[in-house]
Length: 292
Image (cartoon, rainbow, N blue to C red; front, side, top):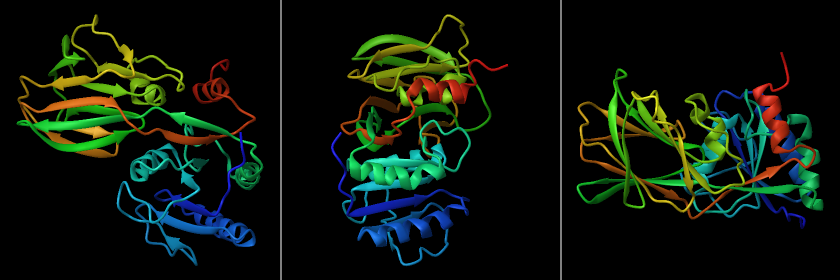
């Protein structure tokens, strides 16, 4: 891996991560000593950004081209970062201030040594497969969202079984009767999909997971299809409010007759990963394999 030239670094601070502000101050000092420009953005925070300039607040846009984005928070912060990066292929280094840390693999103690490692070429760049979910109503495209983990269809009110007609590449698959449907990436296979009984899929794969939530018929099992598939979801008997939720953060209301089309995104989410750990070690640690 070649070294990463760092001229501009962006940092995103997750919500309610007050301890991260001390890290931003230290990061500013580190950048200033190396003539690196630092820009910052807080998610749902109003704290001062010190001498740092502010990153753009609008999803899908950054104030300027960055060489690196540092995420200070949990996996939820990383999901938010993946959304507002948009089509820019900005490498992201996640520092874990949260709980699980599937996506934020670096500890606080590793941050500055990792930054030095980037400048020396001592890092792994992991390009994660993403989804694009398009909502169409009466033949008109209403919204398009990118998901790093998943796109979920469920009821917006009290839980009640719904019917979801699924087609892949225009071929009828099944009419699922369930509490909802999770369309997940391999990265998202260890998130909501896993808790609903979906399989763990290695994140290097290009694949789309279809995991029904509490299906009425136990023979309705999760399905894994190629990453270049076109997945269409229709709701022929929607009698109540339905919601499409992107990465657990962006809700979109659905109406009877709507169609949700999920395909591979044209961009990837480029994660900086530690050189001293691998994916299976992360699985063992987070899922507590081998422990009693």
